[in-house]
Structures are given as C-alpha cells and as structure tokens.
Image (cartoon, rainbow, N blue to C red):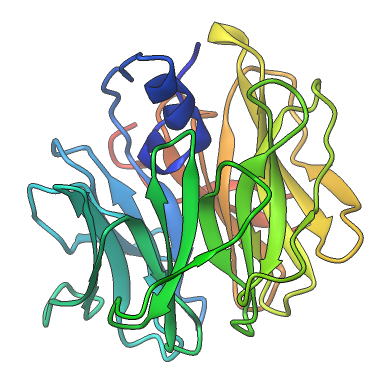
Length: 302
C-alpha cells in the first residue's frame, strides 16, 4: 500500500498501525499547511531535517523559515484568530501537548496537556478537542482550554480522527467510520455531543474521505479522498456543502499522485494543500475550483 506522508495525523497510518505494519520513512518537503488569518503566510510541517518541524513561508513562496527545532514530531498546526501566534501539537508518553509561539518561533510556551492526541483549540479560544484511546476505538474528548474538565463526546462512530472545529466553535467535523470495510467518512457533531450525522457518502471508487477543513464562513468543507492500492494510490480534494453533503471533486487528475490536507485561505477563494505531483510532497496553492495550482515549497531543491 502506498503510504501517504505525514500520516501520523492521517487515516492511512491508523490502518497501518491496526494491521501491525510500520510506515516507511519518507522525506516530506512540506505538508499539513495552515494559512494565517490575513492570508499572507502559511505554516507547514517538514521532516527534511529528520523530524517533523514547523516552518513558515509567505503565501507567494518567499521567505521560508524553520521555526521549531525539537526532537518531537509536530502536527495539528493552526493560527490564533488574531494571527499573532502559531499553535501546534506534539505527542509522547501517551500525552498530547499544545504549544503556542510567535510566527518566528519565539516566545514558545505550553498551553495545555491532555491524556490523548492532537489537542486543538477552538476558534473562540475557550475549549479543546482531542482524541483518546486506540486508533481503532477512538474517543472524542472536549475540555477547557488548559485541558481540564475533560468530557467524552458520545459518538456512534467507533473512530474519530482529524477533528476540526467549525469557525463559530459550535460544531466539530472529524474522520469517522464509513460503510465499506476500512472505509471512512466525514462526520459532524455539535460540541455538546448532539446532532451527530454523516456528511459524506462517497463511493468505494471515489475513495476514503478524510481530513475535513471548514471554509471561513462555515458553509463548505474541504477534504480529500484516497483510493487505490500500492503504486496506483491516488488522492483528490473535494469541496462539499456542510449542510447537504453534496460535493465536487476538484483538480482532477488521472496520474497516481496525492493531493491532500486542504486548508482554506481567509477569503474562501483559494486552498493550500500538500501534493506529491512533482515527486516529493510539498505545499501547493490553488483556486477553490481547482484551477491554477502552484507549488510554493521545495522550489530551490528541485
């Protein structure tokens, strides 16, 4: 099975762990992009120097800078609403930690620690959502911003990966269990645990839906769907209506490459995403209709 990069936060790694398989190391030039609130910068993860560290680059591809240098692997990157801080998560010894820092890497501080993975701060800064349990029996937890007063969100789905807050901090989208064996779908639930519903129903041929990303107005969700095995594996990005689930696959391609982990620009007109369409996984930008894709990381090394 062709492994997706940075899959510590993606569904494909969970499947590999459940099957007792190890994901082979792979150099990631850029992945897991997070666009700043003003649209001028993109934070991303790269393991080009051995571990997953956070980098920041201008949206036009200039001024790249590495801003973390730690032995732990960083993921779950986000910006605070005012754009003054970058948030990221790390995981070790069965504990997830949430950190905040200035965009240049200074003033680093830990703001929460939880008995689970990838704590994610709500846009209003009041609550965390994180996952606990095994990869095949995952609990979705909600807590105060410092990790205290944690409560389980009751779910019908046995798995809950890649959880993302809605812009108004009232709902959570996550990767949950689909119909087909090992299939996945995007599921929505209110932050109080009510209103759980499956949003996507892609065919087996279209692939496994995962990694939801809310549009700035909360009306659409970008995601990617992966299909195929081994060297034929491919991933496409989709845009779906957050109420009806009706969607459109964008940036269509027939070659076996991976377009993954979409993130919206604040105007809702563009997406940042990771893709290996030129050989190595890098960060790209394109219009929200899939046109005008442009690579912005890894250009000097090509």
